[in-house]
Length: 107
Image 1: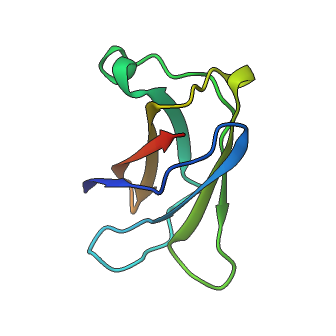
Image 2: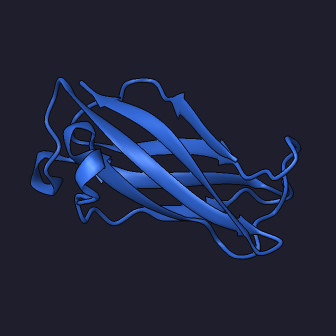
């Protein structure tokens, strides 16, 4: 199940936190292992060249299927104010692969 959503704008120089739910049926479901995530400039998503920014994905304690991805949206990591980015999240549930796209505007 691929979904696309958006998050509130992130201030340049801050840490972005993106909450998401892993699901295979519509209900939150724990992934087989910790999901992975990569950040792309919206303009380069089609080229499959991510920004190489470290993204940490953490399970929310006591909430199966709930996760938070975080990364530093700094100019040193290639981010710019007024630009749009996409967080691509991938996970597996019962050997089936899923992906979510989250639009992340930086101001």
